[in-house]
Length: 225
Image (tube, rainbow, N blue to C red):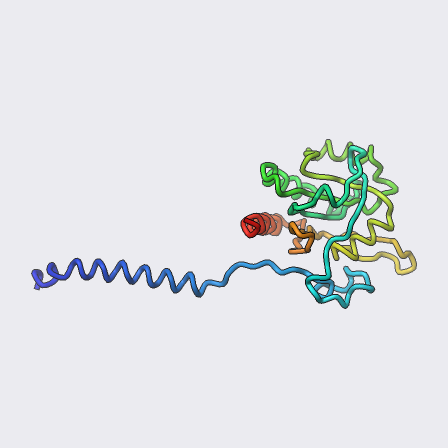
């Protein structure tokens, strides 16, 4: 009996190797391929979207609009500074004592993770631009360790910030109905791809969500390659 098994040892080895290969191939074929959605206004909570675009469902029709804001160094920042980049956008204000400090800490952590990735940047918009002047943003940036080449904190015309928040990033609620440009920022971190399309929303107050965001950033980097 032992002699019989010894005779067929090579056969069993080959059979075992083939079995592993076949199982691996089946697993690879059946494993769902990771994808990230391309968000349109119709896919998002209507509270976060301007009523004039809530009906848009065509993925080819929604991109981040052109913009021009002023950063912490007094420099005008436009879409050209983010051309061909993956970036994360959010909305905050420097005097916020609730969710903003947590969001900023998590964005600072994210900055550390992407500082050696030239294809990735960050963009934070103040929702109280009348308070958050260039000098205020500069002081805030220095306190938080902002790397100027990676992360712009921007201020500007409140109407422009409102419109891009609700018509492009789909991420900000309105405040008082009687005040057209009253904004209530949310905890959303918004992932934008190299083609200026919204690819994800993440709770910026939760570390596990920001870690998921980093995973999706790396996915977009590899997808582009």
